[in-house]
Length: 365
Image (cartoon, rainbow, N blue to C red):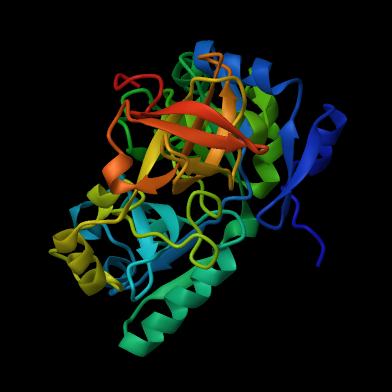
């Protein structure tokens, strides 16, 4: 099967980007260097093409009920223009995907927009449609992923950069708020959300206007490589790597996002997660700082000081900001306290490490 391509694939190629396969898409992984792109976002501003993320619109009288029953957070708490981070779980409470759900302004063609991860848009469209029909709900579900580009403008200078291009005010938006605004002549959904730990916006742009808006955003173009190092410094989950329903199944409580689970609502997996909440978890998602030299990678074993296996790394990198190796992964809960001495087996060598609090950059991020 051929890879899906973002609307600006050739524009990125002309800029000199290198590409990688991610979630069935061919996406830019690097424009200049991961270190330069990472630094730009932490210190100034960078723009990411994240058009591989899905967009599913849900409308109709039962749109809110459908979303409420298929995501773990409380959709009814959303005012117009608000959004929330949520999990999509199966009957056993295992995370299928994580998502952001937006409640759109009144008068739009859809009531809600939710954003599944790369390669999951068709799966989630089918899931929403099947459950709608099973529950006999009056709701329309439309996969509009191919109709839009999506850009993330992130960094201390990002709000001003977008504001200068917008005909409407956007800097008054609080975190997780959004509105439609005309940016560089195109009507875009502008939300104060992101995946880097920095301030900024995510723009959902009509596909035909993608090049115009991208070209107007005069800052460092960034690829998925820097996006990965930035999100790891924050301890953010990556779907398909830090959790996977088949290869690495975990519940929201194990994955450290139990705060997205509202047990006073009814959703698929609720009863299973109520039991997990009452009984506790055997594994916990943690940060890890390596003391010895070496870089932890996905799949590397985590042991206690005596060499007994206690868990596994799911993500790891050399942090460009901290200039030290960091990792994320799951360990047995009794070993999950910060500063616990552990070891990570890196290419057969046992490296000293410590359990760390995330975000690695501190709670003020």
